[in-house]
Image (cartoon, rainbow, N blue to C red; front, side, top):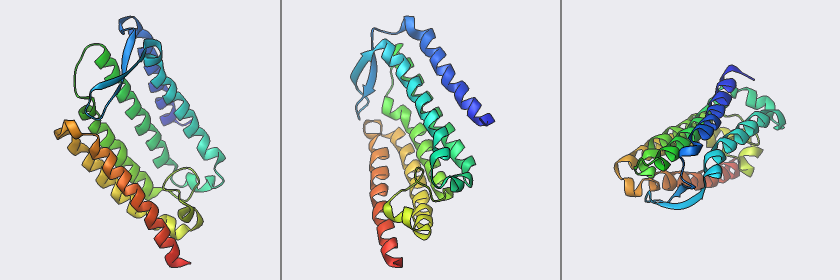
Length: 210
């Protein structure tokens, strides 16, 4: 593995260590899910609440390592591998941040979960935009519609526009910090809206060249 990948693995192992360390201080049922207004609406046993996120991070990390090896267009992934590796780091850091917020909440610290997540969502979505603009045609990473996969030209045009739109979505996510009761709408609406638009856009561009 590369040096950056070892650092990511170390962060995941730290999350497991945090789970073991804080186990005696956690309530028997941990708050584990918050609604769109930042109120707790889900709980789980503390063993699951403490170890689920580290396990998810480990599985995702393994999946991300496998993707470049099994993609039929893996030679294209090599062309933007540094950007993809950075995406892995950003994603695992996002999950680690969410995990720490969950630990703090269950230790008694109170805050609006949606509001606290907005900067992390903003950075993650913004970096997705950077990744899109540099991604080459492949089967796993990027805007994968039948038309982007079928045409190099459609892939490039769709991802160039998609990168710009997701950067805008990342900036919009930060606005949720100032309107905490509706914070998650600043993530969901732009991301879903831009995703649907790009799906249609890739079809229109494909039809224009065939």
